Image (cartoon, rainbow, N blue to C red; front, side, top):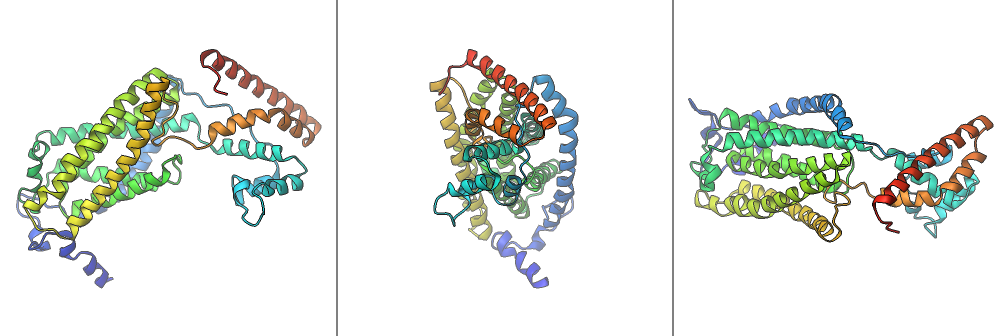
Length: 412
């Protein structure tokens, strides 16, 4: 352990040539960043998780009801033990798991034969079962509301503590006296609070809503945590504060657009999306590479010779920039749809549960066949209740489709 600790904290990794850890010891009237300061982020991350739990239930949930957030009515899948065991133990889509079968459809046929039902009834059961596990609009609204609240506070606080900083206006000041640059209490807490928040996002990733860009989000969280932690130990705090401010400047706009989207405020959502897309493209594709990356790659070379931390820090920044380009491509697709179709159908950047619309359309086609199957596989009393429930649900779906058809043209 001692050898590993000595290898990990070698000054050649973290500090420019000619600077030692002894030079970074706190002097009278000055505080330099120390690696042990990062331990504060772990209890802060746990505090964020507790605060989020309380915020979503005490603030986000009532706010969502007032804004009109409504959950979709979903027909539950009838209890079939064999299909439920396959769903929970093997796969949510049986046609994609069996490599031993000569044909992909053979897995569904085997399940249909075992349960004495048709192939279409098996497919309908799995569609309904997947719909039961999909997150509701209320849950998605609460998650977006929590992130919106944090990003608004973080961006406001970051702008307040950086507006008077010399490196906010002249990026060359990021390297004036580097690395022996003292850190103020305001910048200290701003930095560690942001790092703790991303720790909380990473800890909650298994229970959060799994979105279209789930893998990219994992990479983003890990890269951000590594970037913030390494930059703090190497005293890249000045440039790090600019990185955080650039990211927070557009993130709260995205979360607000999501909130109004789940509440059904289409015009407000579309307007916020246009503002978000503009802010994102300007800050991530123009400001970030020309101000931040150019500063770390080019201007820093005027002060010190390249070392391991220089290459590693810039590598992480380039990873973030690659993610920015990926998300910008998704956003530009949405802008294209918004301009030529007059609406934004979904958040392609990070809020699409894949396959839900396709499942809903296919479910409508097999509704009558599924209902007749449920009648045959239930007791007389349960059959009457199931018929009554299905009739109510079908009436609700019919009313929803009829009201929607009065507003929008059919797409099929």
